[in-house]
Length: 301
Ligand SMILES: Nc1nc(=O)c2c([nH]1)NC[C@@H]1CN(c3ccc(C(=O)N[C@@H](CCC(=O)O)C(=O)O)cc3)C=[N+]21
Ligand SMILES: [Mg+2]
Image 1 (cartoon, protein in one colour):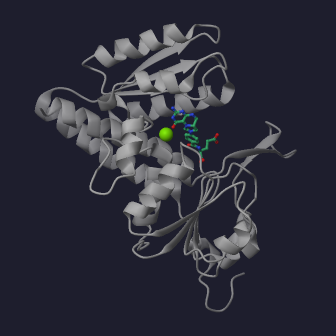
Image 2: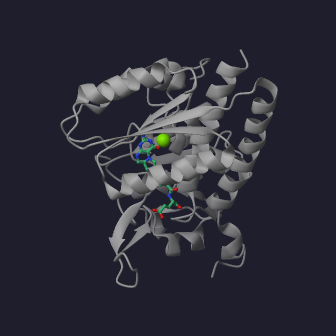
Image 3: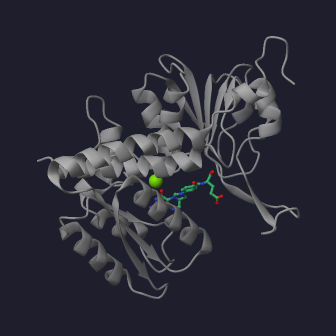
């Protein structure tokens, strides 16, 4: 249990699943308005290459989320052994399709393909993943706004905002520097007037740096790397990790766990996201939000 000045643990949990559900309801209303006014709904293309079970699961979840929000979804499943050129052609076809406002190529792609080359083929106006170099470039520039922001880090920021966390002037530490999460998360926190430090595999004393953080975004991809003694009392913790660890009590033999030692961290933190049920559901809500924005830009013009 927390110390005498600490609130009950149940009140510290940031319920990403509930916040994502609220956002999806809001999106559903806006999609319906767009459809009533212009007779057209936003459309999302999801391209999946190969049959990795985790990718299949995520893609199924994205399709269901689109259906519920009234967003049209187009699916292209391609065999593991298709060529990079085959995938590029599918992307070009969706680029040219006026009913498609967003294109998501599920990562990772098979090893014989150049992911960067495939992602760069997606038209800037349909880059709902926010991975296009020009969108990332604009995210890093003062006075510029990208067309889209990457879904997972955007989900982290929206979780903080909807939980009432005032970011201005706060010390934020991002653990991890991936193109998909860590780096864009740091840029977004900077845009929100945080003082940002990025901790990575070559950082000398990550615990010492994290202990100064008012806000931690943990996106290192390493189970329970962020320990209790890395956390300042009253800090807010966003855990992006989705590590699969053995668990004999589960039917699958595995359980999902975060980059943060949650059971210990919740004792010191003021707020914390669980895994699952934290950032993951927000990633999908932000994908729908980006698709709605793209559809609105195209349909209402
Ligand atoms: N082009 C591309 N864009 C992506 O956004 C993308 C991708 N490729 N490749 C894979 C990752 C992973 N990802 C997740 C989405 C939802 C959950 C999610 O909803 N997770 C649930 C649990 C799901 C479960 O139980 O397995 C949760 O954390 O509560 C997680 C991970 C999107 N990704
Ligand atoms: Mg994403």
